[in-house]
Image (cartoon, rainbow, N blue to C red; front, side, top):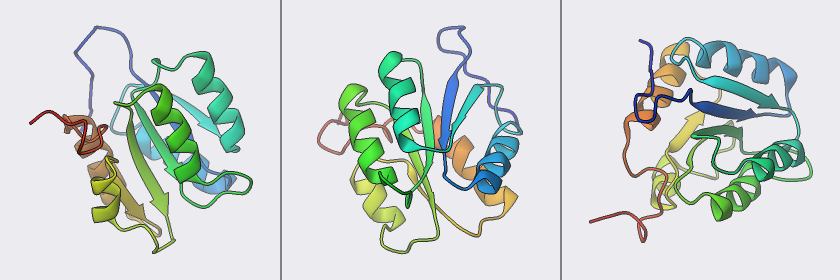
Length: 143
C-alpha cells in the first residue's frame, strides 16, 4: 500500500528519530514502503528539534523512539507540538510505560512496540496518516 498526500500537492515530509542506527535505518526503509513522503532521519533528539524549529510547519508526521539519551521522545514531542499542535506523532518503543491508550489520550497517534513486524509498522503509519484528529489533544479536537 502506498500513501500519497493529496491535500496541497506538495510532497509530505516525515521525521524519524531514534538513537539506534540500525533501528533508524530499518524504520526509514519500511516507511518508504508506505509513503512517497520525504523522510528525514535523526539520531539525536536535539538535531531533530533544531530541524523542526527551522521549519515548524514542514513536517506532517514524526516517528520517534521513546527512550533516548539527553531528551526522551515525550520531551521532544512536547516541544514539537508546542510549535505545531496538529503534528501527528507515533512512538516506537520497547518500554511498557506508555500504553497505546495513554498515547491516544494525550493526542498522539499511537505506540508501536518493539519488536514489531513489518505489517504492524506499515499499518500504524498508514492509520496515522488517515486519522483526522490524532495530532490533536482531546481538548483541541473538534467535536
